[in-house]
Length: 285
Image (tube, rainbow, N blue to C red; front, side, top):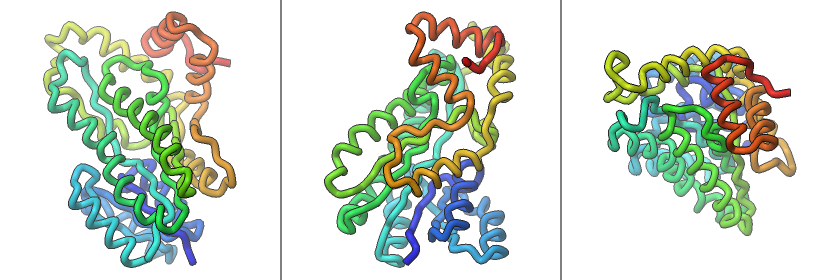
């Protein structure tokens, strides 16, 4: 019997590639998304390749939507083997000029969305005595390198702590919780990002530094990973008999973690400034 997987945020990027890769590897996959109008591409490929790939509506911000979708999938299959918590976005802007409502919404999707879907699958995984939950975090969940992404970094740090604790909580039931920590991914993630409404580049006292960060993105994108590389890491984790808790993806992720391990806090901040604003180079050998 084929394993059953649910992937959130599957309309594009990492979720899209992961859903296809899992289905192509004989896993019955439910590619879920908030906006079903973006499902045509996946449906077309699934039909052409005769994949066990189903597209389902699931809004991670909505209790009813999450529970309805997961309940139906469990009812139809009598099992739940894999959950990939991928849905998320970034809020960009100075903290001073970001509203509390915008910051709450960042946490609603990136943190509480993960908690909702995880809570929904645990009972089934616990009863069947096995399961894997994969949380797509970020390098930014371990190192708060970038300014103007304070809410995003905070949300991903929260996911890291949530995952570490939940692993201990569920290990008696053979439910494994894994972190995927990509660096910069060349996908529609930035297109889906949101800017703080209170930020005005013509008036903000932070405008100059924001511009420096945008210019520094050139050094980041040079080492970006395709979403398919993240998807392959997720598949590798699922195929591993003893996967690691943390699984970085990309040369930039490796470089950042190497720097974090070797540098003091003050040295790390200096390295980040040179990397992201002075453009003196990125990869740490």
